[in-house]
Length: 308
Image (cartoon, rainbow, N blue to C red; front, side, top):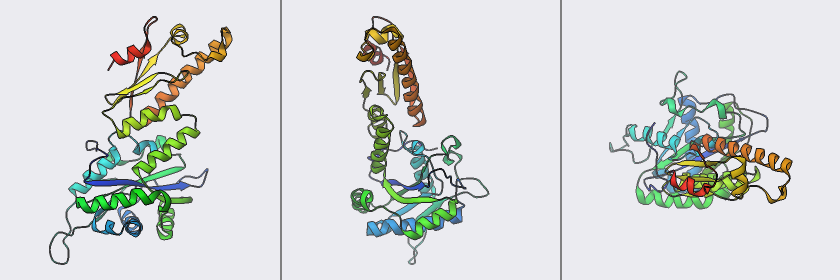
């Protein structure tokens, strides 16, 4: 897979085609054939051009594979980066006048059950989610791209529903029961996931994820007792590993437990479960997690600051 990409890179813009499946159902096919991917790409390019006419002047590329959000929302945007790498290696097409065609429609699918890059295969571990995402990107002339990116960022959230032909073809090609099919910019997708994590009780975790995705050179903390203590920096997250005594003395025990030994024991067990949950979510998003043991009489925050 290629190196990661910077969301602030002005040479392209990228987003996702989101398929919301009927609850309890799954797509029969994880990837489209190249021919089916090309047909779907034609429909998708038409939809985006209807929202931003100048999109037709840009290269449009998509991957006919659907992923779970955690597979796309990873530092460096590795799936989109790999897609961009494939586009960069694709040959130019000649227009009617013999010059390079300024706009290409490029679709990648499977041929003889193989994708052009094995790293682009969806992970079976995350195959059961109700929201499946196909990556796409636009690239080309910088000024045109800036105009189109601005329009799409302003319109996709409210008007990004896929056309009927696009949705019906996707449903047939993937063998899926689709309730909604729509387009998101990457920032739209981040906002949607932040809301979903809030509904799942994981709102305190989102600032770490957001920093890893959008500002990977910055630093962010989860420091909101009784939540576990965690710090994102240098591309990874360090979580303070506390014993029960340090947990109590450092202010992470809930005040509602008081001095009741049974309540404190149950609260500490819940704290440890929460640590594992947070680590699992971060790992699913491709973020390295390290547990730092914090000895008694040392401020856990100081330990995390000194370890990377």
